Image 1 (tube, rainbow, N blue to C red):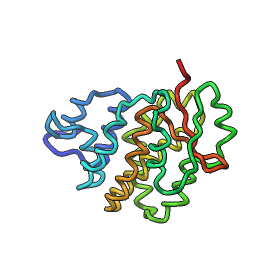
Image 2: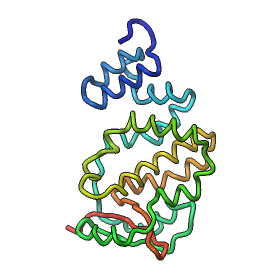
Image 3: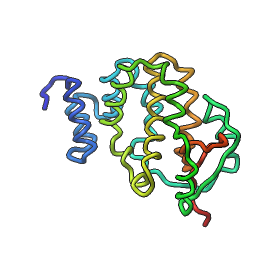
Image 4: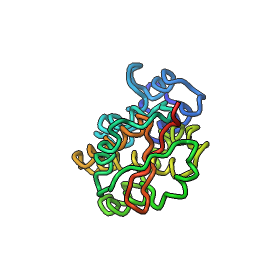
Length: 213
């Protein structure tokens, strides 16, 4: 695709799509982009898309590349962790649901994380910034966004996961690192297998966890 020249931004986007689809490997992608073999092509992609922000964005996104969501038992201090994670509004507590009663979770859900985040934080971010970031996330993390867990449940999970990453990254791009850092406890819940889905009518956070063994 390129010979002795640094790949352009559109070329990098195509290269990343080829990488995610399995057409090429990471080393080959890195060579095409024209970076050192030790350079992470995902970092290259984000730095090319948002110059000067690549490292900060990858600090948020790196754990989610190749991540396969897996439900785990409820954390012993889940209520405390939940209150840290939902920093933009007060919650009255936590309601835990397992895979076997996911239908009840669906009936109890009145607002997804997306609806809650959008109401509280949407005005803080420029529309052009959001649109550019949304396109980049889909291109670079599409495989994780479509992971198998979401196929076995319902679309709210994917939406809540997507916007958790979207807002954390958007505040980095808006030069608001303090606000961006507030999302880490929320992202940590995903990584620990305690899935924060949304809220019930009593302002409790609904969390999906693994069935007891």
